[in-house]
Length: 285
Image (tube, rainbow, N blue to C red):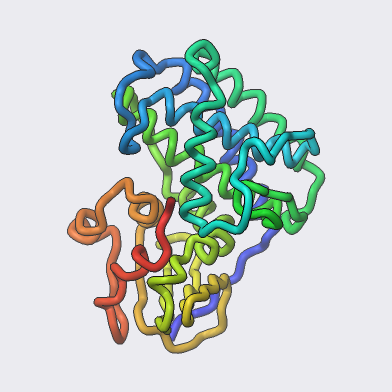
């Protein structure tokens, strides 16, 4: 049985906004310090410049919808109701082409401007305010809280990709990873569920992040729900994890075996062997 936890949405959203502002400053310095934009990044088939262009496009998209700027989304996102992973792959392929070589030299300034615009445009909005996010689907919306958490996630993880390729330092603090997992994952994990692999599957995970949120992740025949502060119930598998380790394993930046071997992720409960299956059912694009 799990123990329900509580959190204050407004307080955690304010903390997420502060973390995003801080990471944007770090990201700008990182982008400005990159010595070779053609070097391989931490993402297969992407250069450091590609990773930076993707991140700049993410900040462009979120700031545009937050500020109500007109965008020709039909030219940028695929038409129709594609599977989530295919849709994101197509969007990413377009996104990295938005900035040519000359523009990539100024990505730091772009991210600074766009990140600041997102924070200004959402400053007076409640955490539950919906924002249209057409790159995730024709009628898809995220709350301001989820969008802020996701923008923090993109900045942290792709900052690491850029730093690894550029040979520069980059850290992801557990406190920041906890904010991502608490604010963005309850929305994004169900979207990223693989409906084919999840067909006929019924499993409940108790995901307990050390010093961070506790999430009930329930997969039931092709659908997933992720709930914070879930009432106590029986779970098939409990995953206790360091927030940074879980974030990096979720985005395939660290292998699961390494996190397990170093004690940063541990599975217990009635069926602990199910833990690796979570990343197969719900995977980052």
